[in-house]
Amino acid sequence: MKCYICDKTIRKPQAYFGDEETPLEGKPVCEDCYCEDEPFVTVLHGRDDIRYIISETRNETDGDFRVRWHSTDPWRGYYEVKAKNTPWRIHPSF
Image (cartoon, rainbow, N blue to C red; front, side, top):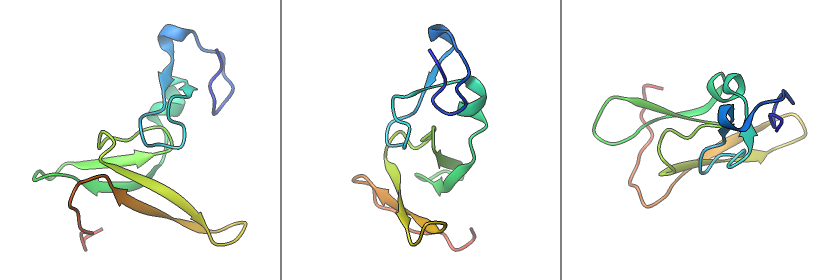
C-alpha cells in the first residue's frame, strides 16, 4: 500500500487513514503525513478550552465540524467552517 500524499510504501498495519469529514477521508497515509499535517482551522469545541484542529488528514472534532475549500482564483481561496448540528461561534481571539 502507498501513502496517498508522499507515495511512500507502507504496510497495512502501519497505515493511518484520513478522518471523517476531511479531504482525505478513508485514504491511506503514512504516520508522518498523518501527524505532521498543517491545520486548516482550529476550533474551540464544547465547554473546555482545548483547541481541536481540522487538517487534510485529521478532524479532531469527531466530524462535528468540517471545512470546505472555496477557490477565488487559481492561487487563492479560503476555508469555510461548517458545523454538523452543533451550535458554534467564531472566537475573536484567534
